[in-house]
Image (tube, rainbow, N blue to C red):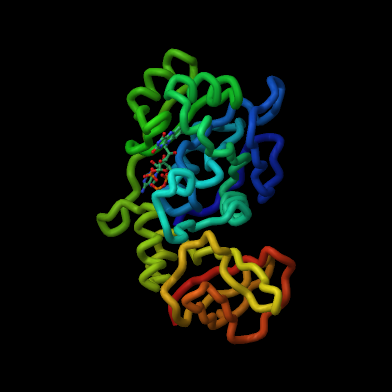
Amino acid sequence: MMSPVVSTFASRKAGALPEIVTESLAGDHPLRGSVLILGNFDGLHVGHQQLVHMAHGLAGKHPVSVMSCEPHPRSFFATQDEPFRLATPSAKRLLMAPYGVDFIYSPRFNRSFAGMSPAEFVDDILVEALGVRHVIAGPDFRFGNKRSGDMRMLSELGALRGFGVSIAPEVAHAGIRVSSTLIRTAIRSGDLRGAARFLGGGWLVETRRRADGSLEMHPDLCKPRAGRYAGFPERAGYQPDRIRIDITPEGGFIPLSPYPLQSAPEMWRLETQD
Ligand SMILES: Cc1cc2nc3c(=O)[nH]c(=O)nc-3n(C[C@H](O)[C@H](O)[C@H](O)COP(=O)(O)O)c2cc1C
Ligand SMILES: Nc1ncnc2c1ncn2[C@@H]1O[C@H](COP(=O)(O)OP(=O)(O)O)[C@@H](O)[C@H]1O
């Protein structure tokens, strides 16, 4: 696991939650001129963490940012019929804070955003709306209408428009490229220990309180196989013993020992199967 970092960006307080930017940054905004990491970022697995470290190396005193559209493009294209998300919007902010991410660029992924050509994305978003200094993505990153833009095109457009483009080396674990898909498969099969290895720590799960006071997993989250797991409530400065938690087929989330109450949304770390 990568160690968390503190950004050297002058206007940021250590550990502060990243800001959420959904539209554009005004011309004199201090978050313009960032190093932006491109992708979906459904959470922050060890491959993603490597990209954030690379971004800090390039950014120096400038901001570091991550693109993570809402809803997740897969929901927009409705290619998934079962819940698949690894991180809710609140969880993403919590996960990225210790890595010194200054803002999350989180535009609405709708028909007009998806319909932009690669050149429009570069001109309207990267240059006009955000004023990026540099962008980073893995070699497989695709963007623009029908995924028509690739890293080669992005490098060419960056050279023309005056920002840098870096292709990140792939991060593998035991010879397998770490990916969100791999982590979803581990979670669905009940292998929370395996998922935690790829995530660099326990899986951050947002829960909700039902009318009867019981907890359930956020309905958008990938569902672990029903069974008994172990984890603890996520709370600053709180280092509890692991609590056993039963997860039901419907996503019911039942801690088996008392725990300190927290206000909603309640975040938990699931670390392992019992
Ligand atoms: C501006 C922009 C437009 C996009 N348009 C499309 C699109 O029309 N069709 C598509 O499948 N992906 C599109 N994408 C890519 C998606 O963001 C996303 O990466 C992909 O659909 C999800 O597949 P993956 O998880 O396998 O990468 C676009 C991305 C960007 C940044
Ligand atoms: N194992 C990895 N090694 C290096 N870069 C990665 C890795 N996994 C994802 N990336 C990069 O991180 C960015 C976000 O990836 P994303 O598509 O959201 O994640 P995933 O591929 O895990 O679904 C993309 O630029 C992608 O190329």
